Image (cartoon, rainbow, N blue to C red):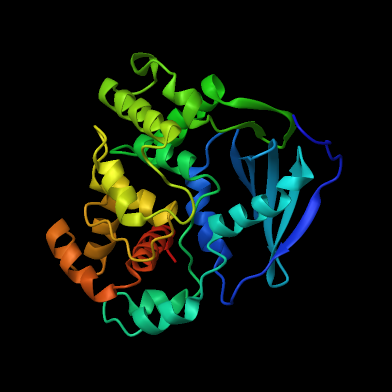
Amino acid sequence: MVGRVHSDPEIVRLGFRAPFDAGGLLDFLAPRAVGSVEEVDGGVYRRSLRLARGFGVVELEPADGRVLARFRLDDERDLDCAAQRCRSLLDLDSDPQPVLDALGPDPVIGRLVQAVPGRRVPGAVDPHELAVRAVLGQQVSLSGAATVAARLVVEYGRRLERPLGAVSHVFPSAEALAAADPEALPMPRARGRALVGLCEALASGRVVLSPGADRAEARRQLLELPGIGPWTAEYVAMRALHDPDVFLPTDLGIKKALESLGQDGRPAAAAALAERWRPYRSYAAQHLWGWLVARGRGK
């Protein structure tokens, strides 16, 4: 690795515009956490980072109106980038007030929004990783996708020299997965081919998901790849490209939430209903998902 290794963490206090629903973010991230790469331990989210000059681990903990970020990095020059990636993951640069103004009066989801006005749209620390995980999540449960991802981590990821808690690896790079034999991956063959094809496109630059990338062009590039459908492209746009106006009418969770609210959850009806939630349909979707989780707990 390049640069000196730090024995003590570097601490950054990440600010945000209140209100901020930290609990909702943890509720979203916890069931999707990939073994060896992420863990949620009480109120702390911990994960590894792949950065320009080396690897790192961050612990994120809401405290005193900020998010306390404790970094252990291979190279301290990566600190600013690492902090910005964490802001991206937690959607800390968004302003909740316009979302509340737009969605709060809605007769279907308004009460959900008013109950949790600080709900955020989780982003990603690495757009390539998010895209890979979106493919793994096609038509499988959250736990099933996380289990497969954890197997890929052990096989194709890199081990950290200094593990922290249960975080011992970094997620495989697009280049590493592009070189994999799709027939040997722990998933149906068609999905394996789709995954390797995606990673080849990411590694070569045929698909660009970097910050500031053109969202419409990124969608087009993704949809041109075999095995990548609208749900995957839109989910990537929502989380990796921070599009605030994404809706997933075919998503099972969206369907269940709408039906529980007395609405028609079928895709065409859901898409038509969501038109009035523009330009914040991503936040509407998060409120529906979050409400479904809370309802399952009896809240």
